[in-house]
Amino acid sequence: MRNIFRIKSLSLVGLLAAALLVAVMASPSQTPAPGQQPPAVAPQSPAPPPVISSPAPGSVPAPVSAPAPQGRLNVVVLDPAHGGTDPGARGTGGIRESEIVLGFAMEVRRALEQQGFQVVQTRQGNENPSFDDRSAIANAQRGAVFVTLHISSTGLPDTARVYVNSDLPPVTDSNGMIPWERAQAPFLGLSRTFGDLVQGFLAQRFKGSPETSQAASVRQLRTTAAPAIAVEISSVTVEDRADLDRMAPGVADAIARGAAAFKPSYVVPAASGALP
Ligand SMILES: [Zn+2]
Image (tube, rainbow, N blue to C red; front, side, top):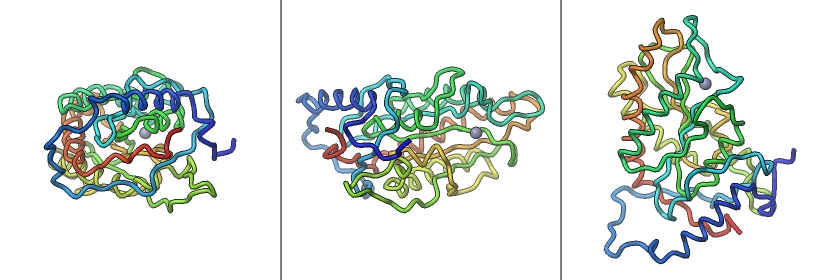
């Protein structure tokens, strides 16, 4: 499969998102309120604008939400990792990562919605969308952050770590488009800011967790054109599943507080050039 596609070959999701975005932008109710205060934190935005090439069309489920109004972060794409024929990490007590992360996702969703975020999940049940399908759901949004949830097979029980993708030198093709495989490159600084905020809240709750996020090569993050983090909870080796489930409210609270703290520092890039 070629990994560079033109805008013409945007997937169905992209076209739907484009149509919705046009509808949103055409609405007079979307103009900023007068007297709106500038964000307190120096805002960052990715550069160059993320014109991302699309994966193969036709295989991506439609997102359940409209794109965010331009300029605001209000969508969190939540990815319970693994699923379907891929159980992820497995503990001796029969604990499956793919099941535990679904339970975590419910808690995280609730906490994010309480903070006023709209949540889009990459899977609701025991399906296993591809890495590209999951990234495509985030990449079809405008103004989203992406959080993938994992349970590790190692690490001190009752700790949690945040990973951001390791450095990806930005590359554009001769048409100025960013290859799908490098979609995360323009967002790495933002991902680090978001990751450090979430990790800080996790460290307060779960003693022994790191103080800052760590860089790693994470396949799911690499193709995601949004500030994106992986949250990994230790671990499937606990005897009793309840020991993991008990962590869910604290993890959810840390992610929601991290997203809320991150929100003022993220200026969602303008749509110019990204969509037809
Ligand atoms: Zn995993």
